[in-house]
Length: 292
Figure 1 (tube, helix red, strand yellow):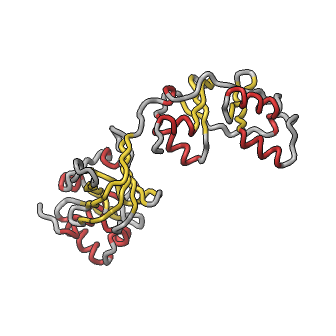
Figure 2 (figure 1 turned 45 degrees about the vertical axis):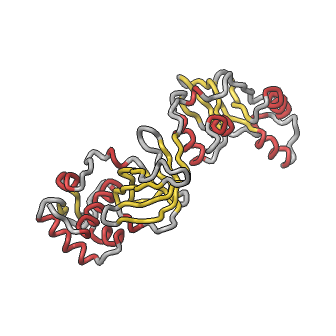
Figure 3 (figure 1 turned 30 degrees about the horizontal axis):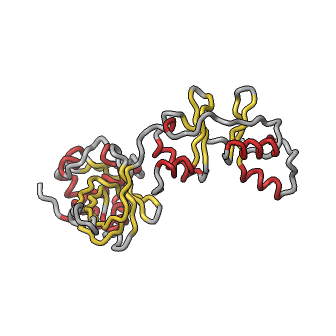
């Protein structure tokens, strides 16, 4: 069927919001997203409902939901598999838009690499000059950074000049972790910790008593403790951080990179069957992938 531009815009926005919210969507929310008059959206919704592309949900919490015909009309997969690739602007994920397809329009030019980014969502929420990051993609874990230099609102697509393309390592962290694991006991002192750090050229170690991990201590923790008046004879238990971030050894490296950023940490403990087997730090990641 031949949909008008505004009908496609409304339908794409409905699908985007529906997948994000997992409940029926009000016409006012769609109007706000695409910057249209709510009355216009309601009228178009009635037309879309008449041709079987949307269903109406009655009641105070009602609204509209897309039908399977809507996905077919827009060549989308109703399973949600196409909605995993996120797009961020200035480091913050953009709500209401996901990447459906990436087409490289120039790849062989020695100085220029342009791409067309087809969206599930409205291109109107982006502006020329926006610095965006796309990915990582589900299969190849490709991360693309670039600047928006054009928009095609008919196709809901962005034209970007890429500044960086990164294929994130997919191997599990057991291939990158530092092992064997150097550990300390909670009854040892800050002086013992410094000696261990200097001996093995490390900056942090887990604290383990009777094969149970009770915390982690870093050189930053020790420096802060000494600045606050504690001495080198202070027990590690008084200084260590008890909230230890762990990850199974089969966790893939790109997932750990995301966790480092979200938790604002510099290291985490790698475990197998609940037991610590190694440690991975930002230095380990930079060694594997310097561009991060």
